[in-house]
Image (cartoon, rainbow, N blue to C red; front, side):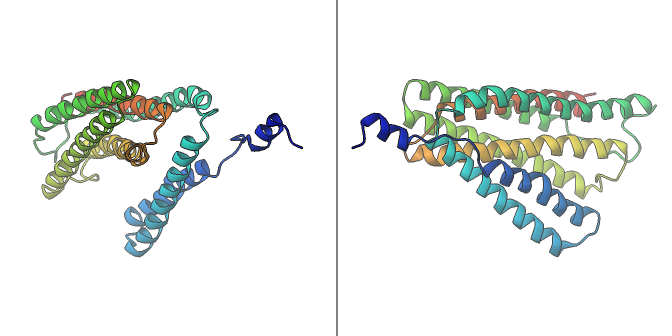
Amino acid sequence: MTSDADTAHVHEHHWEWSWAPLLVVAGTFLLLPIAFGFYFAYDNLMMTAVFAGLGTVILLAGVSMWVNEGLTQTPLLAGVANIGLPIFILSEIFIFLSLFSSYWMMRLGIESWPPEGTPEIDKLLPVIMTVILVSSSITCHVAEEKLDHADLSGFNKWWVYTILLGTLFLGCTIYEWNHLIHMDFIPGTNAYSSAFYTITGFHASHVLVGLAAFVAVLIPALGGRTNKTFVNCVSVYWHFVDIVWFFVASQIYFW
């Protein structure tokens, strides 16, 4: 006969490895960059669509797998997050710092800034975008507070507000880009345009990743399942994206 302790030991599961990180990395840092390469370097729309499609599907599969593992195998999640999240944020800081350093070198190395060919860029829109992004951080914090008080319905509501505000911010970026491109201000126009699209685009990509993370948390939460560690990680990431935007706006638009 098997004792209760033996039965518990048989059913105990240790989360020792996962395919999810490999899928996320393959989609984000391999297939999608290849798609961008085919589009910008070779002007091959067919191969762009193929690699972008594969990259997106594999990325979403990895994220879905990761979320499911986090919701069903939680004992080790908090410990991993406490180590992994600070390392991730630190690495992101250095990436953004390298972009800003390149911009500062160009900015200080040219007598006339912005260079010839740069249209007048509206200063009101980045202010509006700042208000939107700060508001999204506030709604995100309120959602966390609701979850702390076991109010899952309130959490879902404020979490959706955050998603809507983040989407609005991303829409403002797309609107601005479309407006500037129609004014023939493209990444290859001059040094400022290269820096402008690189830095704002890199930040926008982080907003997009944040929105995907919000949705990944929201879908199971709507079904009554959530994970405090997941919510904390996504919130910290979102607040980080918010803080970075202050540097993007102040340096790119107002200096």
